Length: 306
Image (cartoon, rainbow, N blue to C red):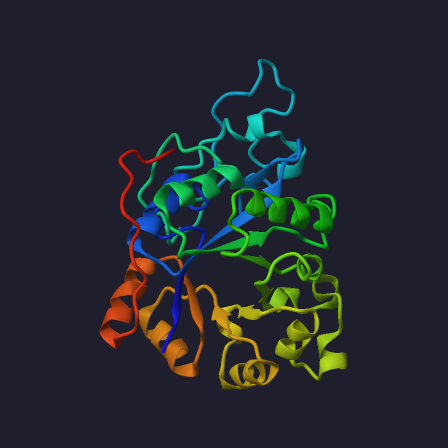
């Protein structure tokens, strides 16, 4: 039985998310796929960020990119309103919980001074490791309900695909998005496409279709209709009914985000093809206990990038 371990935002529970140190650690730990998020800057650069505005939890201002920059401070500003130079001043290596318990601050090793990387830098890191067997699951951050924050989905998708192709990584990559406009664009550009779904996005604005009216509430059939090759639902949506519908539609299921090993074991028993996790170390232990094939760790680099 082949079930994949997917490192979420690298390994968010262990190292700063969507960073080069986080990606390096995850590759050295060993995963089948490494997932990260990409958005577009004001000057047309592709950067790793989960949020369409600079997050106060994962980012901290340091100094302005230029003296007297009127856009400073940058935390809280839209990513698409800031240049790469501005975003590169941020420290994204330390979590800053805001008024509530942060489940990752207790387990994530901080790496102060870490900068927001470009997609090209991550692809270069993967090449430096020679991690050709690790699939790159690239989530394109696009919110059809917030066009003021989101890049044009066609432009964003085409730029990401071009960068993957430039680094000779297109065949070993997948495009993921909650915004199914991205998947429609990607259909003719990349072979592997994940339809992300959660309760908040099960509506026509996100899907571009009426899955209840036109597909009888069958989200798997809806995903297959727009050319998705994998269905990737929130863990709370996954049960026997969804798994049966996905099987009927011919779509494997990669469930997110599962951090509890008992829940992961239940998901494996349901027949999922992949588990997206903030703690790939825990999943490796579970895989070993169940006798599942483990992904090979990448050999450590002499110097870890920041």
